[in-house]
Image (cartoon, rainbow, N blue to C red; front, side, top):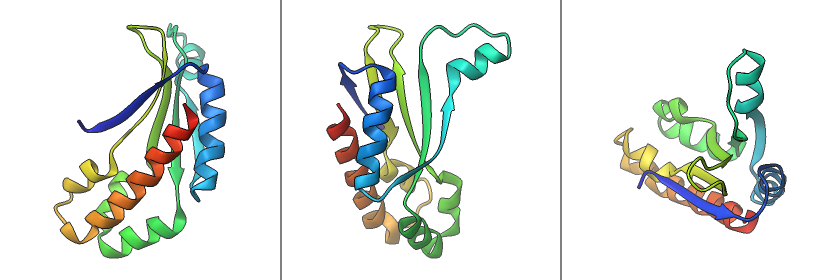
Length: 129
């Protein structure tokens, strides 16, 4: 699977708040929150379910991977999503796995960095459930 996704009993808003706090503990900051539902509705398009995209970054890790291979910049910052699932109405928290994305670059020298980042982001997701 290219993603890591969990289910929570929290609302989308509660899950985003919790995720932001847990990311901060892991030295990741939220650079931007994109409220998909609000944006689409402001353009006159219907979208019923809450859907948030967060762009997160750890500057030290970004500097490390960009120094090793600038093509990693295509994948930065890391994306995380919090949304109400269409199929079951439950709140999901997820992300594309950094290890899967790094495989696309074809540079084994940064696999360990990607794995470390992925593990810390997974911890933040798990603590946010």
